[in-house]
Length: 342
Image (cartoon, rainbow, N blue to C red; front, side):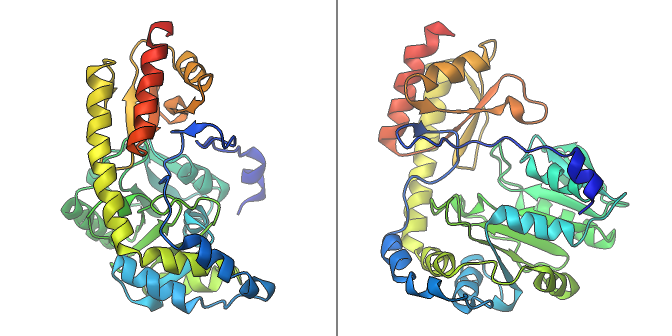
């Protein structure tokens, strides 16, 4: 990491409400957790009184089954963002350039800039057609945050092949892919996949995730990973969560049904332009309504939505998570209540 770049850097805004009494649509987190999670967490307390097993074998085995790869290719990390940093800092150096989708997760550009490198922004729906030659890395977020669309698997694999030919590493952020039935790219040559347990399993405070890589890149990531970077409770709960196949299937069904219902209501009742989505959130263009006024008005009624104007290129958008049917009904009620005010 470049010291001068750190001094010039800034924090990236994120969603998420600190007040537990607020109904939070600003963070794309499952409001439900897998059955038995609390019991596994409590049972791991005794293990937390000593250093964790740095190899995390049970966690790696569950992760491998979860995404369909060899356990030896799994590199545990304390959350998806830690994995993004590890991948970038072991590949990207001062003066390098990296292809980055826009609008998308702001931490990609920040991590690149912290290495003294430059993000090259490409429209998110054109990235897979971009030429990776001359770039150290290309980043793909699938489904993309905040727009919501999953990358076409065939197009993504073709892009991965072009990246390999150009000696540009492909970093694929699959933080939201578990909400779909699309296969992971984990294990593909020349690709580093990053996964998070935050979103699908409703555990943002746990800080658990992993990378999947192969060859020299796998060795680099394993060497550079901090010792004991995944605590015993996180490893135990993470392994448990990733084996809850029925929970995953039920979540996918619920999110798909509620996403359709919510998008229809936001479009037909409020006249919003809502982007199609494969993710547990919707990007909403509120038109000529004032975004600040809208977010403040719903906040005053105990609901938080994400101001999406902080994403590059968006100036009239909010992002709303897809939650439970009752929660989603409450959001629609609040929006109907404030519609006349904004």
